[in-house]
Image (cartoon, rainbow, N blue to C red; front, side, top):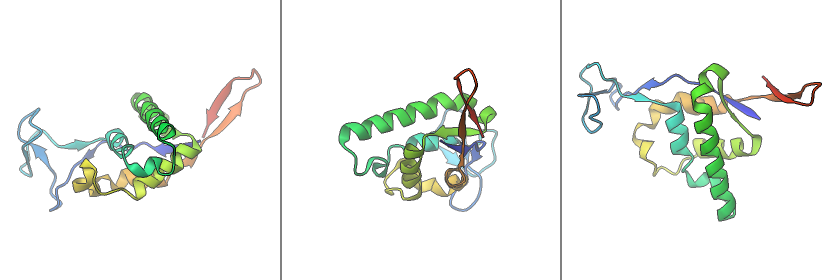
Amino acid sequence: MKRIPYIEDIHAEGVTGLPLYFLRPGDYNTVTTTVTEYPVMLSQLEFYLERSNDPRLIEGMEPYEGNRLRYFLRKSLREQGPTAKARGGYDLDDSPYERFRTSIMKPEQKLILETIRFNYFRCEEAVCDAVKVEEKTASNGVTAQAS
């Protein structure tokens, strides 16, 4: 099992390097570099959920198995979202992790987030910096995780 380190939400930058802001709350169509109190924040979890749509994640798999992998990966990420910060990251089994890492490192260039992908470098780096989490069996037979 691998643990991908948790990354705080990222204040998005435009192609010029200036931070991006929404003009009004809830107005996701109008973005400016003029400083307002509504920064454009990017979430590690949202990036990972978006990246799970990459065709490379299920490349070479039977359609059913690929859809099953994608479903359980997204489900696992969503379930871990609320506790990821306290736990220190997102835990993935080794095989799904390797496929997910491939989809992160070699995207298809057609996904929604590609225009601001440079903002997600820290999230990509976190996937590469994942650490092995060992599972230990206690004397009562219960499996516990240790990092």
